[in-house]
Every structure is written in structure tokens, then in C-alpha cells.
Image 1 (tube, rainbow, N blue to C red):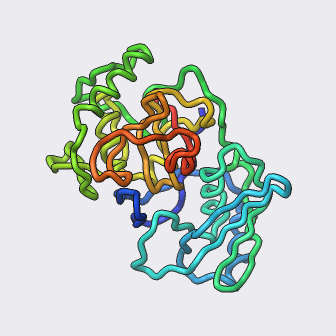
Image 2: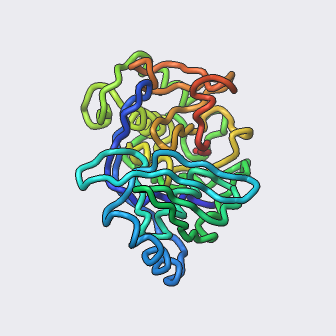
Length: 285
């Protein structure tokens, strides 16, 4: 069982023309990096990058050279954005590329920022992210806990079919609920944003307590699997955590926002907008 590694970042959200804003929380998981790698990262970038974090503008993986190329820009102390990375640490860089390119053999990272090109070290230990599709996973999944005060529609020992029907039932019960950034009806508020909606659905359907942050769901929640192996009930992550939804089968997801401003269905078929923007699929049961 492998947990998705988290990005070292501050709380933030990303403005996209068709993507609902997602509430975010800071946090990161422990990783296995040697002191030499961390100190080497600081030495490599200290002459070229600002003291603070940077915002990643684009990320590309070259399968021939096994190099990830990042384009970034400096950000101020009050800047906002979903793709904020601490490039002074190999932990931050390795966690980002591991989550952005799960299962890829990344051997080095090249960063373009402030007119400079810098090679950054990565830790292979943090890049060992599974993309297999386990038939069963640990319950509750990584990044979640069971809520002892709630009686979910499908308990931990329910069948996979029963759990999906529970997830779908809760999600459909909120159909048409408007998008309101930062809101979660579990907190007595009206409406949801994309990641608070998915947290609400898994909470009431399966009893999971989990973060309402899209970035935390991207980096820490669930078990990453290959897109080709996704099944109904899986959590879908788009654009490195800018948007999330729940796969319901037949080439569709149910989600909040995503350009329609409410809870509804959107296509994730190959060639569709959201189908072209899938970053990773997370198994939740």
C-alpha cells in the first residue's frame, strides 16, 4: 500500500476559466530522503531562485531522457496558486513530480525560472508510486479515517457494488447544488466547492473523514492507480489538483463546478475536456 506523496506548499487555490475554485489546506507527509540529497538541493538552487516557493507553470516528462522539465515563476509571500513548490528541497521537488507523473522513471528535473535553467536532484525513493490496480485496498484508505459518530450508507465490510451505490446515491442527492468556494454542508454551510463535495460524498456514503482540500486529496488521499484501470467510485484528480470529481462509469464523472457551476455530470471520455486533463485516479474502496 503506497500513499500519494504530498506537495510542500501553502494553502491556496487556482483560478481557471472552466474549473471551480477548490479550497486547500497545507500539509505534507514524511518521505525518505537522505541528508545529502536535501543539502544538495539547497546548494543547487540557492544561487538562482528566490527565497520563497515558486509557482509551477508547466510540467513535461520526456520518456526518452527520463527528464521532467518544469517552468516556474517566483511568487510573493501572499501569492495564491495550486502548483506551489518548495524547490529548495529535493523532498518538495520529488513529491511534486511523483504525484504529477506517477509510475514514471524520473531521473532528473530541469527547472526554468527567472531566466535561469537549473538541474534539481530528485530522490528515487519518493518516486516509487504504484500504478497497479489492487482488487482490494486498506480500509479506510490512505489519507482518511473512519468517523465513529456517523452511520454511513455502506460500512467497511460492504461489497464494492454496495459502496459504489452508496457513493452514487449521496452524490445524486446533491445534484444541482450550487458551487460556492470553501463551502461544505457538513459544516452547516450551503453549497460546495469541488473537493468539499467529494469529501462530503465519501463521508456520508462510506464514513470517511478526509480533507476538503483538492491538493490534499491529490497528494495524500486514496491509492493511485492507472487511468486505464479506473472503476466507478474512484476519485478523479485533474490538472495536478486544480479539480476533482468521482467516476461513475460510462465515461462520466459527477462533480461540483467544473464549468457548470453546480453538482452535475461531465464527460471524462478520451478526447473530452476533462478526459484530456486527468492527472491521476485514486482508489477509495
